[in-house]
Image 1 (cartoon, one colour):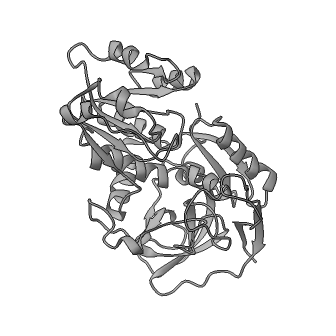
Image 2 (image 1 turned 180 degrees about the vertical axis):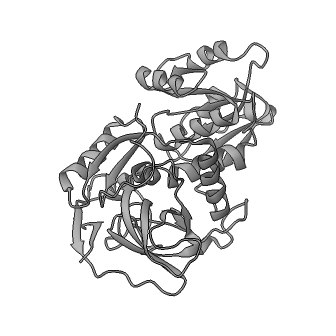
Length: 363
């Protein structure tokens, strides 16, 4: 029977517990008339998976398969547009069709993987999924790269394109915490749009790699005056930021308000430093907008994948391990994430089926 990867419940307080991974056999899913049966070729980790194992995420499930990201091959289909043999990407969240403001029914919205809000996850060998939640994988991507795209691509696309309004040639964009999946994917999108991208990181090597990918500059957030250093790097004819795309929180408002233009935008897709941060009167007086952004709609997902296809963008993959039953290897990916060692996505090659694309993009 097909393998499924979940977490096992153990005793411990949130933030102190670390749930072990558990592998089990489950019957092959039976798709309904409007569903596809997909063999998972590769799946990928996100920070939410680490938070789930530490019980720092809401609605944790010990029965739903882990992981929101997956690329697979259709093995059973009634669809003419997605026939048997088609390589596909699954949307990493369900219950949000197209409303740019947010899910049409907030109670029906769910991110896949390890959650009570959905019984679906990509940490399994086969999945039955609604046809409307599936899009063709761009041919230039390998299955590993395809699995690296969905959640970070959707999150970065909505933050940059839908929420910031600054995805235009010549605009100055600051992306914080470069090295993480969303930050790197947002960097690739912004560079493809012709933006001037600047980054922050605590690792000079990651800043150097970001410049290789097209960033105009970058600074270490460990420097006490990183905001002043960044100001000196901005173009002379446009010495301000149009938008900040941030996943950390902390003092981002205090640091960036001096750099943003009047009416500039801070888009917040995460707060890894702290669940709270200060909002300053100086930001109010400067008419700065703070906009929260989480995931995105099916419409945004399709637009993002089409842009990746058009621009031949290849997600950055940090490391790959083979086999859903490779407990030691998968735990090693989680250790990379805990230590912040990764530059790009951490991927599990499930079936070993690699059709399309070349070797994964690594820096």
